[in-house]
Length: 364
Image (cartoon, rainbow, N blue to C red; front, side, top):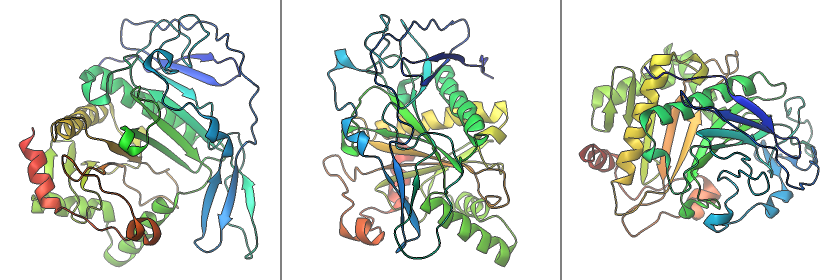
């Protein structure tokens, strides 16, 4: 079991945003004063607009047009900034750090967004929280290259932030995620992920929970647990399995490369995992990402999505899991989400899930 100091060291950035340092044993964070002349924050800089044709909220965050875009390595805002004048992380070094996004889609405290009545124009403040998680101070690194204890520290940061954000008034869903690779649209190459605290249930989460409720009413069991059991029994798409976790390519995978990681025990979120399971999650996650990067001659672009659910009646059927997906369909080709996928949400797969699983198993 990894020995970790779980309580973060807290600091503030020049415009008042929160900054949290998570440290490996024996390391002491040493933040310096952030001396950048940052403009004051506007808590109402983004907006929710309701689409009555789909029943979904759309976030309008025009200020994100000004966010940092592909800076040279020596101007990376996620690298340590020991002078307090150059970086979002004013410190000589760090292990893992979390801070409020300077260009957030969601900001400020408020009540959850409620579905409006009628069919006119409806909007609401885009209250919520957007955070950045820097996995390492090494600009050229990646999550897959982290030592196991360091990866476990990232998992601890996810867990700590999940617990705090789930307890924040107005937050309905906590979403930890990573976009990796320019092909995905990444504008900062430093290894990092993000965390969103949404004021509403996202459309995919709402759909999955509705399916899970229907499954429970018809069959009496948990949809996700039953899907996991079927994948394990079939075995053709299982990529890796331990006493605590299972990784598999789903039977109806939508993406050219898609792997789901499930705990073998039903939990709704990271907070409900015990220390041994958190250790096991870090190891399984590293294993899958390592296989991804051995598929082709270069690193695989991917999206990592942590599906978490609150301990509430409305989300009671949610089963924590991680979905990893890539748009790369061969060594030289990308899968573009064109008309069928983007306009109709009808995915067309160019490869069989069984073939992808077999390839990933070979890359152990």
